[in-house]
Image 1 (cartoon, rainbow, N blue to C red):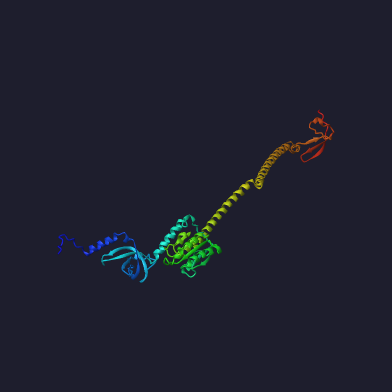
Image 2 (cartoon, one colour):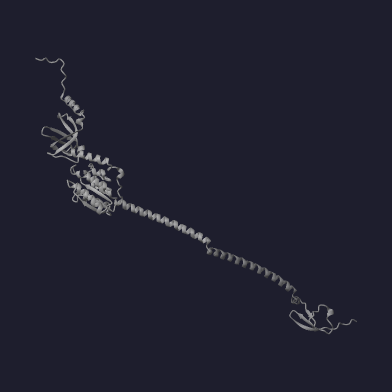
Length: 408
């Protein structure tokens, strides 16, 4: 019979034991970054938005939780019976005493192998330089022809056409229809790209499809499709799946759009911005033209003024004015000279008047002349009996000279 030890280890509470187990699990690096595969059962999504489900195989089951914020980013949500691969960290739910997987990513079973193939091809093409930024071509700002490689029956085509028509209706759109899913999709996509470049010679090509699982998008992870995009004469914009989906085609393309509609927007300018730009250019052109016309008007006016200064007409006008001034001065000088001559003539007339014998006669004097016209101005010139002619102020008469009287 065995004897109990006197030093028994202390008993742990359920909480202490659970926390110890939780610490062991969370301290294991493998269990904090683990992929688990199995079949989904008991899937539920209550009003809280969290996901609760169980994944199981033939020998065991594992409870799983995905919190709402993580679930909102999921592009794939499983249903009961689906085979999935879940990534996350293993820990203990203390209140229930259960270990469970706190999942952060879900994908359909089998995607792991596809993902490894994706990484292999990506590394190969990247090493060849197909992803280099230096080889990517610029997207034309104003494309005249836009090619589209997609399914003719998918919603992606309708959405892209609506965007192209709204933003830039001036471009011609050419569709190269092709399946975008399944085994026949890769060679059809390659042929569509080649035929589109050869027949339509577009300025840019949109390669697009809507969202889906990794299997749905696998045609765009095909090496031949990637090389056809790299060899396309026209630059290529991809719009494949949702914003979180990346394919090999996206890395090779000249530009990636997160969705088909985003790719259509990247390929075209905004029509409203173009109209605003044209109006702004028109206003600037009008202002520039008006300023140019004003400048030329001033230059023309200045040239006209300078021409007027050197014009013979200006000199002629100046000479006319000078002539008028000279004529005025001549008239003034002539008037002054005439006035002086008149004054001189008046003075001479006065002097002549003073010397006029008739004026003397007016004062009572008489002019006596002999028969031969000789003026008698001394008595000794008159002979007795001689007839003399006497002129007074109002006429003339003849007289006879009497002999002088004898003195007694």
